[in-house]
Image (tube, rainbow, N blue to C red; front, top):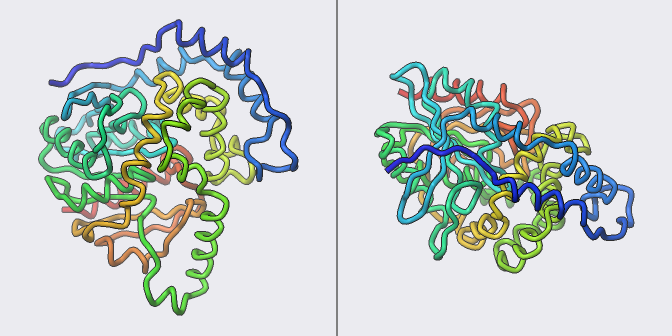
Length: 365
């Protein structure tokens, strides 16, 4: 059964949020002049003050509710999704999957342009946003891919495409492996490891990628280690403190976007807070982090993807494997090196994103 859904955050949740923001117990200032110890205190206080007294959730909520939204039960879990149909009844269905610390908010700039060519489906991952929170283990990448196939079948789509980045890339990759009506996939964060040849005799490009991987492992993976090992412990602080949740997410908008040192060069304050609100209003810090516990160590497993695959490689992606590393894992039929943009591709560069998705699926029979 598919039920209509509208976002309606209760007034008491918003009142409680305002109260918590105004009563924040702040830490001391960082000991450096940059972001190397985390989100700077002054900027965090500035954002929190705007969230409390400048940000208008009701206006942003109304904007999100312009999309057709639904909930359906899949294996005893409510799955929330946007389903925006094209005016063309023969359009190809396309399922878009977000990652962490993202949400369906990432796709709000691309849904309407994509409906020119696609029936667009954007589900919220289990434990994220307005989807249900799994009460038992097992909701990893493989199960989510199967659930998305069930969702598409339930919507009457027996032939469709899939797209994703971050966890969405992992889910989309698995959808491509499984088939089940999926005719092609498009990803903006391909999952690939160095080849034996590149490890022994790396090219100049490969040396740069290997250095970036080492740098990310050294300085950028603390969040994933915590979420993959102790998500419950982490969740107490993030669920109790809106500033804690804010900083946990905004740091990634700084680190993973093409922002030239400041996240607001890539995304507006309202856009970042729209995304943070989907975590705060649903108290989903813990349930979203559990996806790392479920799946983080399994991403290297799995057979190659046989269906046609398009890759959009954005220059400020967390790690940007070259095409040569990806060829053995994907049936790559289109590869685009993007001129700008980072990890949150649809959010940061909606025009480039839409253009590449259209161009790739136009090649699929």
